[in-house]
Image (tube, rainbow, N blue to C red; front, side):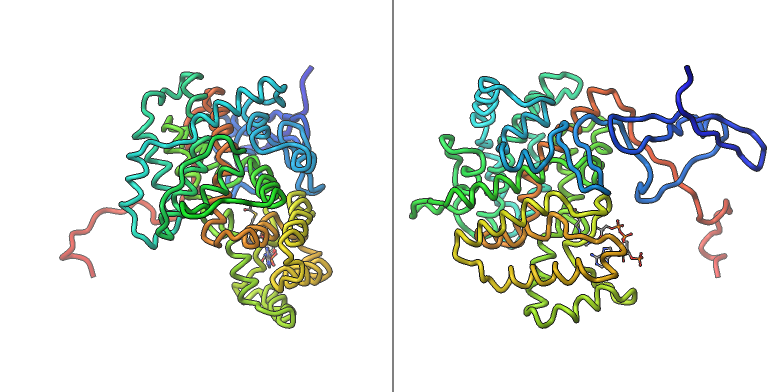
Length: 431
Ligand code: ACO
C-alpha cells in the first residue's frame, strides 16, 4: 500500500512527480525531496534551514510550539530533576538509561580518563594571556587529534567509543585549564573521587593555597545546566559537527568546528550577551526604554535571551533554570540581587508586551543560565565554554549516529545570482 505523498508539478514543462511523505515517531512529517533534482532537474532552496530536516535522528525531539524537549524520549524536566549529567551522557550516547552496574562502569571509565596529556597542557602557553577561553577551546580540542591518533579510525565502532569517552572525560579539564590560563593561575588537576560536575567546579575555582568547598545547591544547579545543554537536535553547532564530520574528518576536528559555531552571540554566546545587556540596562527604571529599542525595526538592539528559532513557546529549559536561579540566589543570600530583579522585571514586561507575545518571543535557556553562573562566580567569558562542555556529549552522539548510519558527505547546492559567464580582460584593457 502506497504511503502519503506530495504531488509536485513543474509548471514550465507540465511534468509531475510524486514525493513520499515520511512520518517520524513524533513531530511534523517530512517530504523526501531527493528525487526532485533527478526527475525535474530542480534544486530546492531554504536559507537557514527554516523548513528543511537535514537528517534522520533518534536522539532528541523538540516540539517548539508546545515547549517540549525529550532526550531519547525522556522529558527534560524529569531528567533535570531526577537524573545527573553523567547518567544523561549515558542515555544520550547509548539510547537507554543505565542500570546501576552499567552506570558505575560508565562513571569509572569517564573518571579514569579525566587527565590530559601533559604536552597538551604545555600547548596552552602558546596562547596570549588575554585570549578568550573559547579561542583556546577551539584550538585545544582540535589539537586532541594530535595526541590520540591511536583511535582515529572513524569506521571502527570501538575507536568511536574511545573518542567519545575521551571527549566527555577531558573536556572539563581543558575548559577549566583555559580559564586558569586566562587568569594566570596554575592548572588544577582532576580529583577522581569527586562527581563529574563537582570535579569541574573544583578545577575551575581551586587554588593550591586554599581548600575547595562548594555548596551542593550550586553543584546541583551546574549539573542541571549541563543536563539542559547536553543536546538540542540539529542546532547550528551540531549541524556544523555533522557537516564537518561528514567529510570523514576525525571527531576532535569536527567538534572543534562545532565549538567555533557555538561561540556566536546568536547561539551559545547568548548567555554572555544576556549578562552584558543586563549590566548595560543597569536599573529596573531603564527597562521600558530598552523594550522600546528592542521593538524598533530600525534599531539593531535585540533582547538577548528572548526568542528561539524552534521554541515558539516557553523554553522548557528556561522553566527549570528559573527555579534553579531562585535556589542558587537563596543559597547565596542574593535573592535581592539587582541583576535578578532586573531580569524578572524584563521577563514580566516582555511576556506581557504585545510585540513579544505576537511574535512568540519567550525567555530562552540563556536568559537564566548567565545569572546562575554569575552568582556561582563564573566570569562571563566562561559561559559559552561551559555550554561547550555540556554539549560535547550531544555533538559526539550525533556525530557517531551519522557515521554509523553511513551518511554521505554533506554538500548543499546554491541558487547562483552572480555574474554570468564572461571572458578574462587583461589589466591594461580594464577601465
Ligand atoms: N528581541 C527583539 N525582537 C526579536 C528578538 C529579540 N530577542 N528575536 C526575534 N525578534 C523579532 C525579529 O526582529 C523578527 O521581527 P520581524 O518579524 O518584524 O522581522 C521576529 O522577531 C522573528 O525573528 P527571527 O529573527 O525571524 O527569529 P529567528 O528564529 O530567526 O531567530 C534568534 C531566533 C536568533 C534566537 C533570535 O530570536 C535572537 O536573536 N534572539 C536573541 C539572541 C538569543 O537569545 N539567542 C539564544 C538562542 S538559544 C541558544 O542558542 C541556546
